[in-house]
Each structure stands twice: as structure tokens, then as C-alpha cells.
Length: 186
Image (cartoon, rainbow, N blue to C red; front, side):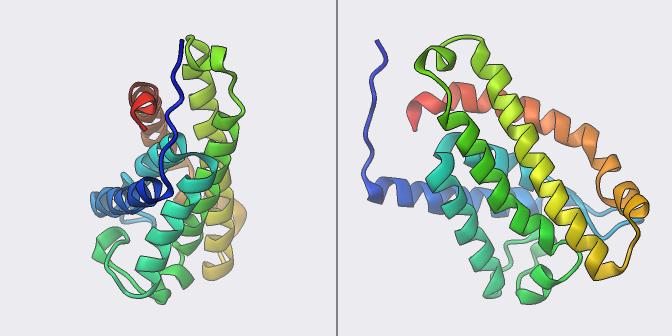
């Protein structure tokens, strides 16, 4: 029989802060690419974990905290950058997309039945949720990139989406496994 543990709001808000910090650390681990201002980083891995573990309410709150910390100038974004100029720049849409991705992931996972959570179906649902969240993040980020840089759609896809798909697939696999293992503790 599965036990439901009710956590205090204080505990959940502490987790929001912790996952905001994890997102910052993962965003710092980045590899700049010469052909695009969008770096390869582990930020999306943190987003998948945040949405998967904190859910539809606290996952987005955590990433709002992360985004606000960066907006006020704390160096939480990739390349140890912060400030409104980063959010207004070509990668700002992806950062805002993190919030939407966590919401989507949390919504899909919260719709799981108890039976699905305890069977092999959980892996498929977690992966599906993360793919949907990533698609939303890509859509927002790429749209903003196109607007801010006046780049046509095909060129934006080549610069901002296609090169990142293999790495994001690996991040989804890792996050799916981690969420499945850690979900019972949070």
C-alpha cells in the first residue's frame, strides 16, 4: 500500500529554492557553440527534474524563483550571467520556457493514476511529459529567438533546435530514471 506523505508548505518552498539552485548550477555547466548564442547546458535536465519531482504547482514556482533571481542580476543563467538583458536577449524565451515546461510536466504527471505510478507505465508517462515540456520550451524559446534576432524559421531550427535534440533525448532518459527513483522521497 502506497503511503501519501503530506509535506508542509515550508518544506515545499525550501525544495523550490533548492531546485532553483540546482537549475542555476546545471545552467552554469554549459558548452558554447560557435554558430548560435544558445549554449548546450544541463539546464533542461534540471527543468525535467523540477517539473517531475515538484509537480504542477511547486515546479513552476521553483523556476519562477530561478528566473527572478536572474532578472535581478544574480548570475544564475548560463555563462554566469544575470539581468534583464539576458531575458530580453536571444535566449530569454528558453528561460521563460523553463517555467512552462515544468508546468506541463507537472500537469501530465499529476494525472497519473496510482497504478501507473507503480508500474512500468510510469517511465513512459514521465518521458512523454518531459517531451511535451521540452516541446513547449523549444516553441517559446525559438519564437523569441526568431523575433529578437530576425532569424527565419528554418535557420532558427538549425541554430536552436536540431543540434540540441540528441543531448535533450539523453537528458530525458536520465531525468526519467531519476524522477522514478526519487519521486517517493519528495
